[in-house]
Amino acid sequence: MILPAQPATSNCTIGAAVAQLVNSSPPKRPGLTSLPSPLSSREARRPGLTSLPYRRGRAVLLVGLATALFGCGAPEPKAEAPKGPVDEWADLPKTPEWLHASAGFSGPHKEECALIEKWVLGESECQASSCEHARDLARDWVSHCQKITPDSVAKVKEALAKYEERSTQPDTACFTELKGILGGKCGDDPTCEAAAQRWTTRCAEKEGSPLSVQILVRYVQRRVKDHDVELDLRTCSTLRDEVINNVACGDRFKCEDAISKIDVYKARCQEEGDRPSLSLAMAQALIYSGADRKVEPILAVADEENAVKPKLPPQVADGSAVVINVCGTRVDSVDAYYTARKECEAGAEIVFAKTFKIQGSFEIRVGKVIATDTAGFIARYPSLLMPGERERFDKERGSAFETDLDKAAKLSADPKNAGAGVIELYKLFADHGREIFRNDKKRAAIKAKDASFVNVFKLIAKAKSKAKGPKTELGSIAARAKQFAYSDIDAEGAAQFGAFSWAALFDTSALFPESHAAYLKELKGFFIKTAKDIPPDEVDADYAKAFGFLAEECHSNADKVKAGERTLLECAFGQRTCDAALIDNTQKATEAARSNGEKNFLAATFFMTTSGPTAVGFYKKVMSTAQCEMPTW
Image (cartoon, rainbow, N blue to C red; front, side, top):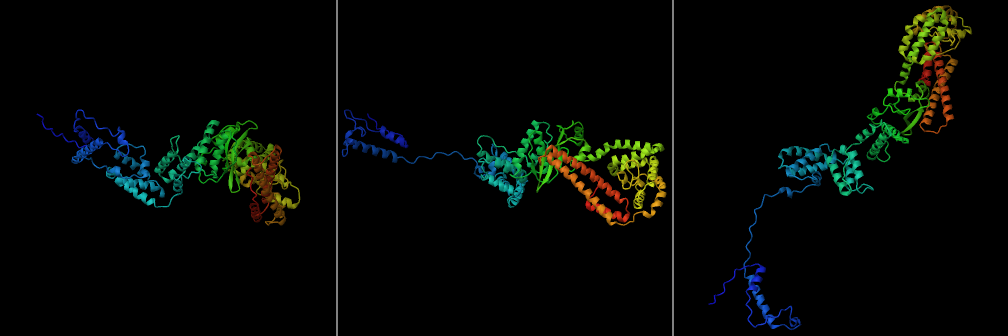
């Protein structure tokens, strides 16, 4: 018994329907040839001819396929997996500032918020429009993090308020430059790395925006392919200090290293055509010289502040020059300078860096001068003296002064040697006159030995009492004699009208009160004899003319001394080309002007000792107008 066929389980996928249809096709009957395949029958491919068996088979196939497809209902929907909480963080947009600040970070949202918070608060010193980055980053933090780290909301919002207010202010010059760099305006440098470093050095601290630096780093890194970008955060003041701190570089190699610091400072902190301050230019000259490099003249501008100057090596009294080395030795103090100079061999040189004024600016030059003793420097290069060097020189000569004073006092105290004492006291004033004139202690030392010179002053009085000449001359001698015992006395102790010296300039009534009193007693007869011939207290026209000439010559010779030194300095520092003959002639002319100038001053001062109060006041005005002053050389 043949059982009826059971319906197959329905499978409604397209592939399954086709397979089901194929499986349910009726079996082939025995002896019946299979229908030819439409892909293998040549007749079927001929136009206009179709095989009947093929058409019937195709119809059966299409009917079965339609039944299989449309007879099934819609597929049952699959069960979906339960959804987790929505990630609001992922849907929130992030500003470029956030991306710059969080570059390279990987971690939980809370830690990322903490990182961004540090960046936000780190912008607290930002200025004006440079706060735009801080403002945008703070806003971004509020939108992302206030639910995650609620304890920090108040701090960030307080900072945000400041940034919003500041960012409305006009762009600073630095921020304008920053926008140009980020816009690719970097000249011939396609990477903008040099421009970014220059901006960081000059502007990062001023703008107070670490985020701006980070943005620059990432911007440049995208352009640089062959190395990692790191921007040096040292400021111009720091770089300048590094230069200054190397002025005492002890050898050529250290000085070469210091030159690289100069190059960095100049590249980052000076615009093209900018000139360094005087002190910084001095430091550069010192370092170049220490590296045995030729130092070309450096143009400079006046110092705006004094932070650099104290760090320089020993400077001359007027600040116009600094010592580079003394006979090949670097020195770091005035005492070391004196010690090194004393140890110099004959003909050795001292190297200075000196400032010269030029039109509208200054010029620093390096030069060499012969290392003479202090007396030689006072005579030849007074502008290269160290602070207090004159006083030091006077102090060093103090022992010689004391020896000479003791010698004169001993001779004078013995009546038999009083004549020699007159000459020795004269010599004491001739050799130490300028020191005695300036130094209270030396005058006090002389006054302390007053009693020893009574015999000397009596001899001087006797010499004047025997003076011969016209009454007008004798009257002038008497007029001066009342206060100035050594007036009209020559180097041999003889009375000579008009003889003057350093000794003649000192008021002996004050310097030797006891000796001067004895001297006046000896002159009583001379004063009575010349009483009618004492010059009147009036300004004589001829005397005034002669005095004016003296005062002018005094000033003229002082100018010649200055001009001579200027020429010698110009030769030493390469401002002019000088041969040995020019230098020698200049030195001789300067020495002559110095000697003549000193004589002019002494003569003019001596001239006033004859005059009364009215005439003296007039002559002092003439000297002041002519700028005739006591020599300082």
